Length: 322
Image (cartoon, rainbow, N blue to C red; front, side, top):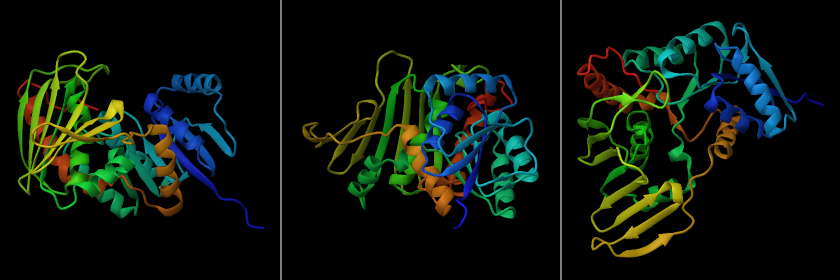
């Protein structure tokens, strides 16, 4: 009788996002050895307390809290630390351990130069890597992609205080998924940076316009008002779609703004329910429906170059988003 395989997973960064990853891994119907690492070891006590409070099922799972990361083998390395230190952290783990797959939270890195350098290292070490922009994995957006197939369209995302700078990547990635095209121009109409809810980082209100190689555009707008829900609008020649993600609603309208019908089954899945499926495919097949890191560089590089110019106007030498 063959021995049941135990998969080794590392979660680097024990904050709220890391905990959500832990919850998802514990839902896997696989035997998993989970290694947790954080620079701040006080996080370990918080995790242990939270695991007991949430009564998480550890069946077929083991959890280890590491003091250092050297000479391990990881089937999956999940990097959920802050973006400002992530390049050095990922490089350290890769050079001192054997890593098969890696999942990186957005924004992967703050410096434009770090993308190609780490991608080169991934190739040398034959590591498969993805960026955690999950919209393209939702069945509702997969269905929408089929609806929009061979259609020419533009897209606008607007709403109040939705962390435009740090969350833009989700909608750039969604547009890229729905209409594969490269960014050729970015125009900013951003206000002065303000403090983010996350200490040490910045956000901004205003807008960013992206023009793509197929002459389509994506407009992103964040308002400094309360209670304006995030709305996704998709304009094509004969139809107008409105999506309210937080209400799980999508409406089809004609160009006279008359509602044709609504899709009641439009649904944004919970991250913890979705990511365990993603992890299963990565661990078993070395595949998943997230965007591969190497492909994401095509839109992340121009986006970050644009933000670098924006922040430089306000005397920032870095891109303080995460």
